[in-house]
Amino acid sequence: MMLYQLARPLLFALDAEQAHHVGLAGLDLAARTGLLKPPAATQSLPARTVMGLSFPNPVGLAAGLDKNGAHIPAMAALGFGFLEIGTVTPRPQAGNPKPRLFRVPEAQALINRMGFNNDGVDALLSNVRASGHRGILGINIGKNADTPIERAAEDYLSAFRRVHGLASYVTVNISSPNTKNLRKLQGAAELTSLLGALADLRDECGRAQGRHIPIAVKIAPDLSEAELDEVADILLGQRMDAVIATNTTLSRTGVEGLRHGDETGGLSGQPLRARSLAVIGQLARRLQGRLPIIGVGGITDAASARAALDAGASLVQVYSALIYRGPALVDEICQGLA
Image (cartoon, rainbow, N blue to C red; front, side):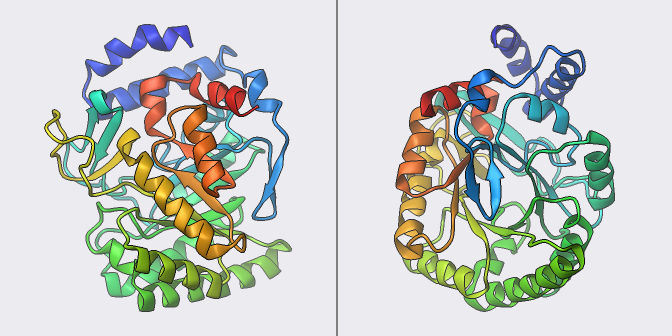
C-alpha cells in the first residue's frame, strides 16, 4: 500500500507504542470508509482444514497486535485467513512500565516487554460482539501478573469459560517472557496439569455448546531439544488441537550491537526466523502429523512463509513484519504462495 510507504517515516518518528496506536487508528478509518478491502490474492488460495476449521488462506494475524479485539474489522480487511486477538487476562491490567516496545529497524525486529497489558476479558468480548466478525477468530488467553504461578490454572480456566463461546479456537499462552515465572508452566508437571484441566473444561463446554472448541498452545523458542520433545508428547497426551511455534525469544542473536538490541523483553521479527524454523521442524518430526503446527516468528515475505510450511507448519502468522512492510504484506505472501 503506497500510503503506508508515505506514512512510515512519520510513524517511525514516534515512540513505537504510540506509533502502534496511531497506525491502528489509521487502518480503522480506512476500513470504515471502504478504502481497505481484502485483496484478490488473499481470496484465491484453496481453503485448508486445520483443527477441524476451514481456513480461507493460511496467513493469520499473530496475537499481540490487537490485544483487546478493538480492530477486528480493519484486520479482517487486510485479507488474513484468520485473526488471533489477545493475549487477554481475566481482569484488566496495565502491563509493564513504559517504554516497553522498541524497534530495531536494521534487523526488521521488535523487542517488547509489554506484560499482557489489556482491558480484560469482558472488554474484549464486547469488542468481538460489536465487530460482527464472521471469519475464524482465535482468542489468546493468559494469566494476570498478580496471580501466583501456583494458581495460574484458575486464570486460564476462568478466561476459557468466558471466551469459548465467541472463539473459533482458544490459544493458551504459557510462553511470554514478560510475565514473571510464566514460562515455568512449560515444565512437564505444570503443563500436564494445566492442559489436562483445560481439556476437561473444553469437553464440558463443547457438550453444552454442541461443537468442539479447539485449543492451541503457544510455546517458547528457547526450549531445548529434549524439552521440545517432552512438550510435544504432553500436547498429544492431553488432547490438544494445535501448537503455535513460536513466541518471542530471549536470545539477542541478530541484534547484537544495534540500537535497542539490548533492551529487556522478547525479540521478534526476522532474527527469530531460523530458530522458529528449527522448532517447527523438530515438532513436525516428533508429532508425525498427529497435531498441526502454526508457524510464527520471522515470517516477513512469501519465501519465509513457504519455508515454514515446508518445515511442517499447516498455517503461519505474522506481526512484526507488518510494522516494517505495511498492510500489503498479506496480499504479497498470498500471491507468492499461489
